[in-house]
Image 1 (cartoon, rainbow, N blue to C red):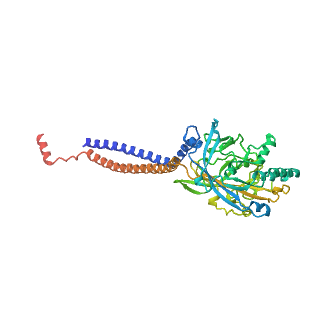
Image 2: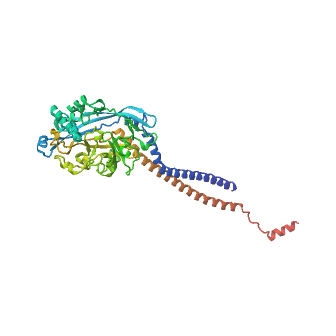
Length: 514
């Protein structure tokens, strides 16, 4: 009986050790589940940040240097159909919007240099190819548009000495230069020989010459840009990832009145610092825009099954108000509401940018011409769809309209009847519809798997830990009952049997023996 009792006690001790082991394992699993639920998101962010850094040889670097996308540019030209009536009779200009003329675009960054300080320097290389099957017309279609070189020269001479204006009128008369020109769409975009520019090449001092011999609104963009861009890689600070540090060795512009307006610390529109929230303001810098363009959250979107945020410029981005006063260094009058004056970046040519169809601009600008319909936000708004965790642009539409602010100059007979007017020339949209499958599949993996893993591991490990704790507690309760039973049995075994009192007979026999 005692041996059996000892065996039971040994079994109890062993089972108690197993229960303690199970209980300890359950606590560890429960803690692991809690830790995963709390910290897995942070670990994933750290991993994403590490993989996003632009290092030569990495996948993100290859995608950044040679994007696996084929952007497009759609151009819409405002063809002037009553140029003579406008000049001679003062009729309202009638415009016929032609297009789109579609060009595919190949992006590449060349001459990349690692500066060993968390930045890369490079040149942009863009190649444009006309796509007739996507276009409504051909790029050799003839259009009538304002003569931008001539009207720029006359507008600039408005405050010059009168004899200079008269001399300019004589030169234009000799060269037979008129306020409107008929050129092909391709010439308007990529360049044509202009007699004024040709003359300037021969007579203007070398240090004052323009850096081009032909005129075109996209002149010099088809090929490798001479501009040197320096961008942060994110190696030292992911909050600066993809942000431009310097442009042609300058860390800010020289045109505006405050450092904030002269800042170039923005993205080129392809990548942004990761972990973007709806309250963030993104910034894009483009040399031709001559400033940072702020972008605010508009709405949530889905592209190729990936959740993203749509950012767009605020409605007052080109407003003629106090917060834009720094972009008006000459003082009032400044650009009309909804227009941005880039003449300081365009060799004093009176170019003003707006959104297509004068979206967000003063309606009177559109009412001064015929043929431009009311703007539609979905068709004329600039936007970028960004995957917020990784900061990658998934879809984009950069929509800009180019306008010429013409000033009437009475002393130059060729433009004496040309009134003060903001004359729209064309508008274009540049962008991508979606990323290629190889990129979107990785984006889906990076954005959908971590939350599932966090939920699965966090709740799974916690549930398993709780289950094991319940199991261990149940076993302990049963073991406790068993131990109580063993103690009772032990008391029964250890108790001596009761001693019987001697009977009378036994007592008689004992006395007899004596």
